[in-house]
Image 1 (cartoon, rainbow, N blue to C red):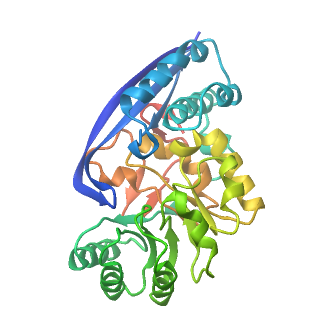
Image 2: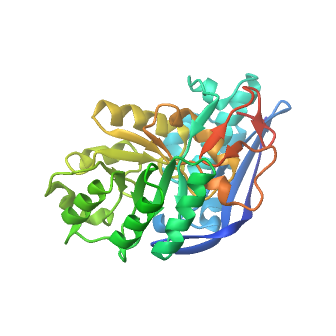
Length: 333
């Protein structure tokens, strides 16, 4: 019989993480551990207030399905008894981890993905003055990061991006406004970003304003984040977005995320894989998606003062895979 534990865990950040919605100094996650016949698996989620989630609410959702988990519920059946969201992700990821460990394999291999020796990931530049952001971008570039994700709100947009581009003329820049802009002036802003060779703009408008994205030609790809959760989201994104950002905490785990990625590509969307502030335990479950994504934004653990051990190996701007058999927090994957 399976045994299940679920508990919250807090990771202090080494630097405040500042986006349009505010600043954070810690990452609070919920962990699910599953053991069966001496084999152990673990999963992690980050409850997100934007979606009405809290650690307490997520834990309550998980505790409600622990009897079903202990009785052997499959990942496929889990999709019908839990809604998409952080709670299901923690359970789904733990079941993937358990299955991989039982097979002496990894989550990536189990999902049919072959990891390269090194994977490029975006490094995030959080909100500050134009000078602060330019300095952060330059430091990341000098330390090896080639792909930078720039967080913005509705203020000093041109000043910040212009300063960053001047500081790192050869870096690939993607911009994330976290729903903080408005339709007025959006076309002009997009044109300016394209002139500054920004490679992609993520979720500029509140999800409720998606219709405005169909009113002008896109001079650079626009990616849905808060507007895209599961396959059910895709119909409403047609004609508005060019890409989708897939995060396991939104899809409710890798099981749905893989299906979403397949459906999105079939419908002509580019793929980005992202994460919340989290440990390597959460990134481990997302790796199968990252291999074929146009952009991978998996730097969540790099903001932590201390990651889980053993954790994934991060260099500035990349993930390094030394060994197929390396695991995260006691689970193969």
